[in-house]
Each structure stands twice: as structure tokens, then as C-alpha cells.
Figure 1 (spheres, rainbow, N blue to C red):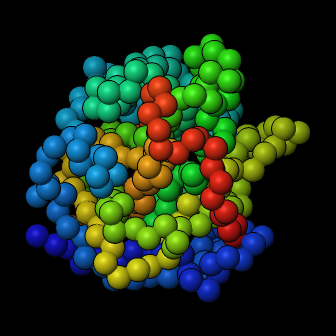
Figure 2: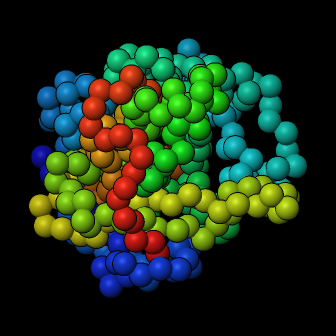
Length: 313
């Protein structure tokens, strides 16, 4: 079964340009709509790791011990507005966050066989009402992207050295991959589901690094303000194969690759409007996504130091 939908890609006329700021105000100019067909991911063989390795994504059964309280998890401070920063994290939210992060790390270990996994970030999405400033970063995604470029590999040794208590030299002898666990926190996903692009159908020459025009430090601490790292976008190409999982349940999660340094695999993704699902009256989709760094002893392949030349917008 296929579903016809609209996906936004990077506008090809900007490919290779520099110093273009990507914000909610410029996003429609920087992206172009394409009509695509999305295939039903549930029709794929549910082979877990094989599908994750081959296509970049898979569906996994996942029910947290703290599932009833997942909605209490809050965004990290760098995604909060000043008003949100003034409200402290609740005790229930903190306990739920810590429990859930540990479970996500265990899930990635179980599926991938990685001996070491570390949560490095998360985001909570509760609709598209707040689409200005940092609020744009936690609204539903509106264009095909990955949260990182392959250049994140350059910082991986420092991340590992800090979390594993090893030397930088030892950390440089470890292969890494960055995963996302994406799960609904309030109900079956009816509208604005996540579309996932089969990496086998991606031509890496269409991928480029893009600068987000937002700071990732709290607005209340401008003395330490830093910019968000690059994200990856791509231009449209015939032959792209998109998938989604209709009616994603609360005891299901999407596990996909942001970047796998071993083979360069990335799973481009975006939310989209499902024309076959109701829009009026549909409960807004709430979800939490957790970013996990997985590590293995080096097995060959990429060295971990990226030499790719990446254009910037």
C-alpha cells in the first residue's frame, strides 16, 4: 500500500551556497515541495537489525516502565523559551526522564549489539503552535533532514572520552553511530506521522550541511551563547523510497540512524500531513525522541575522522 503525500526538500538553487540562515522565516524559500509516494513500513520484513543496517530504520516493540508518565518529560533548557525556563522540572518529570533514557540505551544495545550506549540529547514535540525562535526546533519537522552531518564524527572521540573515562587516544580507536528512538507519548499517531527515507536510495552527492539560524543555549544566558551544529539536508532525486508506519502505537518506537560512522548511513526523515488521516479534531501528536551514541571497538571502514567536504548554507 502506498500513500501520496508532500515532502519538502532543499531547494536545489541553494546547493553549495554559504551563509544562508535557515529559520522559520526562510524555510519556505530554502525548500521545495515534491509529491512523493510513501510505502507502508509494516509491509517490510520485520528483521530488526538487518533492516536498520540496510535501510537506516526499523520498528521495534518498546513499552517503558514509566510509560504512563512519558508526557511529563520536558525539553532541555536550550529548547526552552524564557517563560519555560522559569518553571523548574518536576520530580516526576526528572525520574521519568532518567528511567526512559536508561531504557533507550538498553534498547539500542539490544538491537545493535553495541557494548556502550550513551544518551546525548532529547526533544519533546507537542505540536506546531510555537514556531518562532527556539520553539521552531521542537515543532514538527517540516522538511527532509538528519539532525547531524557526518562531521559529528570529529567530536565523537571527546564525547566517548568524557563518558567512558578513557583517553582521547583510546576513544579514537572506537567506531560510533548516532541513533534516534522516536515514540508517541499520548496516543496512537494519527496525523503528522514520521516519514523515513530508505538510505539505499540516497545519492550522497545530494546531501549537504545546513546551518540553523538559532542559538542552542538558553536565551537567559547569552554570555555563553553558541550556534546549533549543522544538520544534513538533501535535494530531490527520482527513485527515493519513503516509508511510514500508519497508526503507530504507544508500545511501538521507531529506531533510526542519524549517522553511522562505519558506513556513512543516514536516515533522512520528516513529519508530513497524511491525506488519508483526519486533520480536523485529531488530537495533536505528542512524542519524545532520544538521541543515543553507540560505540564499538573499531572494525575497519571509516576511521572516524571525516574528510568529506561539506557545503554550508
